[in-house]
Length: 499
Image 1: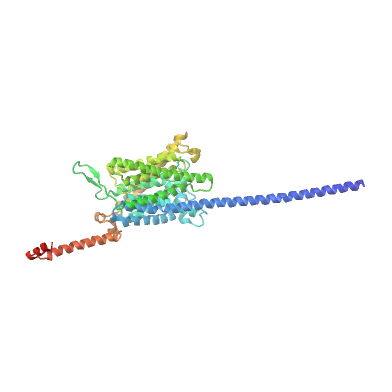
Image 2: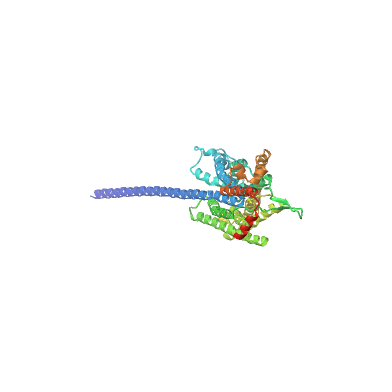
């Protein structure tokens, strides 16, 4: 009996153990299923976050593309009506030629695999399907817009006297090679400036490069006819004001550029999903806004003190220069620092305008070099002092926050690299174009306007019709006077009576 009881007890214990093990197995299966579900959910969340970021970058690129319209309106309003078609066609072709060049070469020169510290590899030439990643299409588009911006900057500096074919050549070279090399240096992980120089949204890589190219082109091309003359009283060379034909278009273009700068600087983070990310984007937009606003007000006041009038040209220069100055550190600066760099950028811009016009006698109709070179350089230097390590990272601690002076040294190194490369390559290109007679239009073509000499007629046909009617009316009047007989005494009497 005792043995039977013991056996029964053991069987019960074994059964309980088996049930327990079965329960543990079920629990482990459930845990495994839950783990798989969590992993799957995490993957979905990561995919969703990546999609949000990519959609953000694509949207910012589309907004930045609208800056082409802003450049076009600003430029056409700031030049004479006789060259309006020419400048607008150049802006259209800038977007087109830059797209072709950046597709064929530029994107790979900047970010192609297999490159070195100086230039990217060949993996992304013509966006070959077997080499590109899932994000390359969107990243190509966003970076293409930056390349197009660099090329557009030059168009304002050579306005009203540059041959159209020369524009096609240098736009292709800037977007396809000169600018992409600089962007590789700073933004590709293999670039020799990457990790040393802080240039968040291209205050150096985009704006200084474009500004140096613009100054080089304007110097080699020479001034517009009649821009600089010898003063009869003093015997000194002086600048002659050549006003644009439509202030409204220029201001509208400036406002569109201001709108585009929000995406230009805000989108350069490439990410928006997450608290730290959207805070950085928001801060970049606020810094951009304040830099432009304060810059415009400062030059407005300076312009009034200098000219005794509220000159809208000074305001445009200061506003754009202020925003350009924020580009290098838009995400790394406090809003109050954005105000300071915007003011400094506007002062640098207008100072370079005056230097070019009254000392160096370089004719830049849009002040393109001053806006982008002068202000871009200020922004590159300023970020070395005012970069907040909480935003920029400990390795980019501004001197004001206890950082090392080598930060400033690296910034100067980057500026020297951008300037030297662009000056050498663009200078050789522009000099070659001038040597073969492809750079400047003939004097008579410049006098009548490039629209009529190169583009089949004026941008404003109504004006042409008015001029033609005035010419015909004048001719008819002269002919009538020649054919009409001298008034007789009887006619004079009748006229007096009628009066």
